[in-house]
Amino acid sequence: MRFRGFEEDLFLAHVQRFFSLAAKVCGAIDCSEIEAMARCLKEVRDQGGRLFILGVGGSAGNASHAVNDFRKLCGMEAYAPTDNVSELTARTNDEGWETVFREWLKTSRARSEDALLVFSVGGGDAEHGVSMNLVHAIDLARERGMKICSVVGRDQGHAARHSTHAVVVPQVDAALVTPISEAFQAVVWHALVSHPDLQITATKW
Image 1 (cartoon, rainbow, N blue to C red):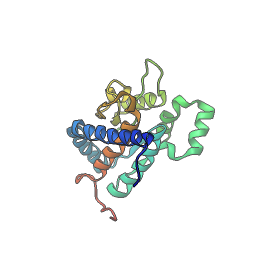
Image 2 (tube, rainbow, N blue to C red):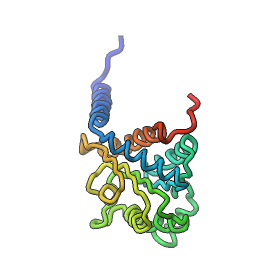
Image 3 (cartoon, one colour):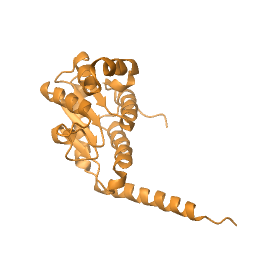
């Protein structure tokens, strides 16, 4: 017979608590806002608009995955600046990190028919100079009349306050805001790309 040790019990307790918190988020997240976001993105696609997806760190990985899903499953032209490491690092080196997304959007000729989708934990904070790359990109999108959608972990960040539609992942544990927010970015975008209004191509499995 195998007996669990003290460290294994602690690990199991953490995992059980993490999934319990995830279930709590599922019950508290604003489904109506996700529904509204789906309708918004459908309108952008149907009008020939493009979707630009921004994220930093783990959210950049989510942005790349989401680009694939929106293009393949929803037939929506979608791009993420972080997929081009050469351009990203060249702009960072020559122009600075704070403006890389804004300048990429300018070169992409972002226009009012397009949409911006932001994945972020905090969503940027102009007052405190946090994630200014997102702040400047959001401001440019606003100037150009773009639809702005965001999936964030804070309701007071720049993204949440200036989005057309913002899904704020409920804060169920202050110590786990980042992992839970980034995990639910994936849950939300998968809800979007599988939405009957958006999905046009069936998945393989």
